[in-house]
Length: 171
Image 1 (cartoon, rainbow, N blue to C red):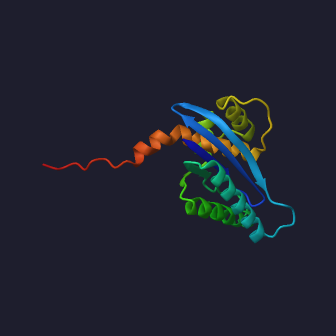
Image 2 (image 1 turned 90 degrees about the horizontal axis):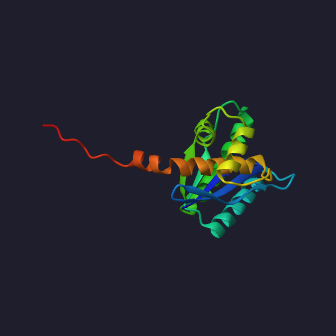
C-alpha cells in the first residue's frame, strides 16, 4: 500500500510517500512544493494543486494523510492554511484518493512515542524508522513522512475501529 503524507502550507507544502509491506515501511519519495516568490494566494493555490495532481498521476497513492489544523496560530495564518488545505483536500477527493487525518500529537506519538516531541526528535525517528541516512529533507517533507508513517502504523487499528460491530439482540 502506497501512503502519501502531506504537510500543507501556502508557500511550502511537504510530501512524503511510504510503501507499507506487511509490517515494514519503505521510503519511496519525499520533498516539497515551493511556490515562486511574489505569487498571490490564488496563484499559489493553483500551483499547489497542479503539483499535487502531477504527483498523484505519477505515483497513484492508495491513500493520503494530512495533519488536522492546530490552534495557536494567528487568525490570518490559520485562514491561509485552511485555504491551502481545502485546495489540497479537494484535489485528493477529486482524484478519488482516500483521505485520513491525524492531530499533531497523534503523529508525534506514533512516530516517537511522545505526543509532545519536538521537530528534531520527529525527524530523527523518521530517518530511523525508514532506515534513511542524512539530513537531506526539508522539515515539511519530514513532517509529511511522519504523517505517512503514523497512518501506516494506525491503519489496521483504524480499519478495525471503523468496522461496524454486529448489533446485539436483547432477549
